[in-house]
Image (cartoon, rainbow, N blue to C red; front, side, top):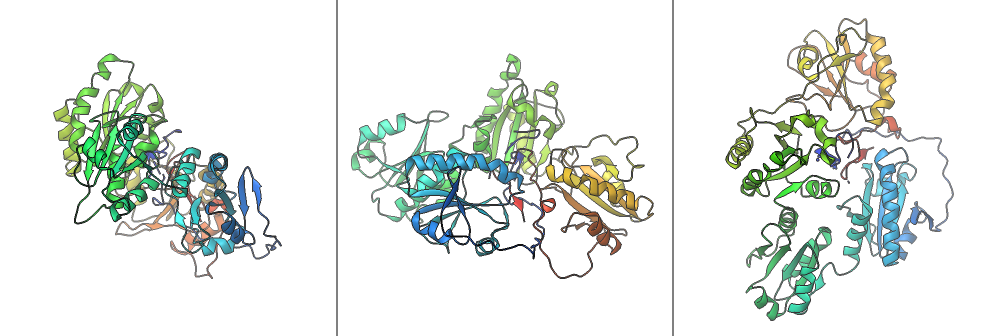
Length: 539
């Protein structure tokens, strides 16, 4: 779903930004799931089936939802929560997407549902995180399609438009094809002997999904001959790198939608990407599992010259590792804290695994193609240990009611066999962390004189742990006294009384009837201060 102090999407698995190298994630992507609480005294409003709008977006509820489905062949619906920060950030883009669609066709519209108030619709469509976007087609409310595109206005509008009409342009002859290809930096053309066959239908499905690429189809014999083809083939034409990449259709197995989607996303990227506001969605949208980063000051000629060797190493790992150049004096400056770097550290290299944000560095930077290839292979083979960030502990870290942990002191405190340790992992920019800060301080005051209970916190953006990955903020973990290095994730209400019940009951809440809470304090934010494309908030 979709920059900031840490980056937008280098997140979502989020990852190194917007991802930190990552949201949305994240996707998803390990966010804390909490219970939801229903207000019994909430009065039911009597609403009509009239379709009202806000900023061009249909305002939907259980009384007019069916009418909206009847009147609009394609309806992309956002299920949101009023308190959700990601939803608030999405709102202007969603409204702009609605305007773009209105300019194109009345058959496709955007709508929104307050999923907190409209509990029946939330239950019917299994809404578990905010925002959730679903596409309803031809009035069918039983099988909506989960939204899988970018979270900017153009991306959302194009994703819907690709499903409203032909997702690929029919190319009749050589002149038409040449004009289509030359007018674009990148274009995918499917050459099929039968445009009604299974392979062509699969290609149209891919075209509806990969909206960053223009798609064309051709079946004329003259086009097969003009492009040197004899069998069904998908060709990716691009004005960079090798210029053209062919993906022949397997005559036995046909065209695999998921495989072709991934191949097109990978090969539509330049072999070495420059990290910028314009390219970040491509970098993270390709979902390549590892990134190799070269941090440069691009205004220094000697550092710019290192790009050639870096590029020479990249081809070996295409599709497995994405090579990215980060300008420490430009847009890339926003991600430096995530890697524990300063502009003066350039030039330097870092490898990052997107699934867990583990970072790796050479013992001593070497920039030759051979050295870079050898290092990447060693990381992939598990022969290099991750580099773990750690801040320096404050002088009074252990005298405060809430102990301040850092990477290098975490083990000795959290796994002290004589203590029960309750730790809040937070990000300084996280609004949910800020909202619960007072409650955590009060909890620390309440238990500061207990010999066997420690209340602590750790800035998870500045400190990393070898065996614990923090995927959402705030995350609360309880480490009980005794042997075994046990850890319990706290997943309930974030108020002092509930925290106290949890602690007094030995790291679990007393048995109570299940309740659900819609309170905003029970939300988490993904590891991206900007709310990357994939970032969502759980109920």
